[in-house]
Image 1 (cartoon, rainbow, N blue to C red):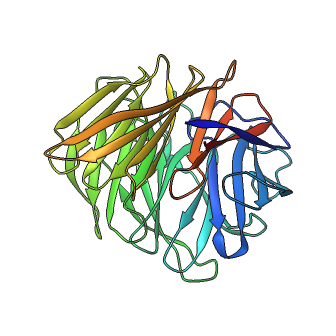
Image 2: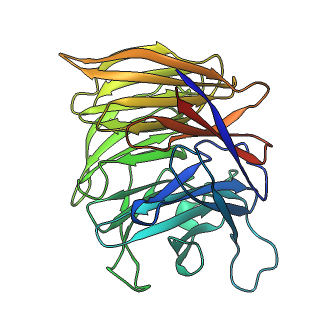
Amino acid sequence: MYSKSKTIPLRGSASALCNNLSLNRIPEKNLTTHAVVHRSAVNLVTVSGPVTGEGQQNFHHRQVTCREAGQHTGSMVLQAKWCQLATRNLLVITSQKGVQIFEQDGAIMVFWHALGAAESVSGYSTFARGVAPVAGSLICVGTSSGNVLCFNIPPKGPNVTLTETMKGHSSAITDITSTGHTGDTVVTADDSGNIIVWKGPKFVEVTRISGSRNPACCICLWKDTVIAAYSTGHIRLFGAETGNIHAEVCAHARWVSSLDMLPESGLLISASEDSYARIWQLKKGHTTEVEHVHSECVTDIQLCGAKFTSPDGRAFAVTGYDTNEIIYYVQN
């Protein structure tokens, strides 16, 4: 159903992190920028041409290093993700030191938030991880303490403010998803497998899904369904309002490292350390149903990122640990 199309070169290899691929599409300019984390830097590569990776393409590379002012060495980056808000699109980078927010091309830093004592846990590393835009002007960022920081982003300029801290988790946040800038629902997951659904504008906990001590490493939100992927290789679907489980899929043989969802079509892609990327079709009935559509084995590569590159699901891209390229697959 899908076949390998092209590879896009990176200036550095991909670190072994979950969700280690983010895309920023600019359709009016026919540009797609990819972000892949390598240690203390984020490698950005902008590609001109079709989002399917076909045809003649030009590459433009940029590297964004995460370090505080006056520091010569960077801090370890955990995630890089673009957040589309109502009036602007920003690149958010989380690290062991804090949160950095850049303009979408990565050239200008808009805001820097250093993690303080409130986010530190005795005997554990301090870091920020998990990013999602919500309610038009807010960006939520998870921390190693289990707190979720909520930043208010102005229509322009650097006057970003920390407006709220959501407290409900006792383990480090692994991932955050939301209804995007048009909604006010946020879903957070942690290292113990616990998932919380929050409702804004003043975020309150509306649903708690208890974990089984296995990390819920990646989550998505589709309609009223929470999709969670685990270190055991399972993917589970829960009702966002009830917390009831709708389906469980033995999707992979190893840790699931990435999820991506196309809201319009109901297509879901999962990637794992077992070298497989798999595509699933979600259907809404009395409960949410799951149908396997396609499997792609990327031989001898431990996958750490996967994204659909076209809104209709005709193409997707993957990254793998210690590889310096992004691999595109296109529907036959």
